[in-house]
Amino acid sequence: PDVPRQHLLTLFAMASDSVRRELAAADPRKASLIEELVTRASDQIQADAREQSAEFKAAYSRIQSLYAAGKLSEAKLLTFANHGGVDQISIALALMCKLHVGITERALVQRHTDQILVFSKSIGLTWETTKAILRAAAGAKGYTPQYLDQAAANFRKLKQETANKAIQFYRLRERASRGSPS
Image (tube, rainbow, N blue to C red; front, side, top):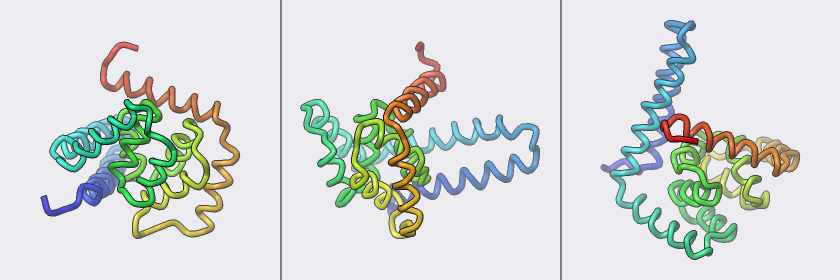
């Protein structure tokens, strides 16, 4: 209870990657099965942590209300990135992209910048907001200016149509993993 949820999620991500590498090295023939099982376990731990977090529930309720009222905008997301935390950003991105919050949360915590670029481009965010999201996700470790320059170049090259197709793929994969009908 004393560990902030964002740090706990980062720890889960690091542990999952470590376990995945160790198990895959032990039996390379089962690497894809190991990948899937570790991802499922990590997703369940993330979901449990979300369910037990009163802060997350309050943030979700507040941001869901903004979204339902049509007031969840890029400006609000920029505010979350500059002054909020990963919970607010992941919830807002999930709602705006129409994705499960686990996907956006995982991308932010594991610092999957390519996914963050795709999320941002698909909903028409500016580079300024996207960069603020990347910085918030990186936390104290940050990104080098060169890394951010490369991310900006990738963001500019990424077409919104391509990002939308990737988002559709994430939605389909999520439905398939949950066993729900298409």
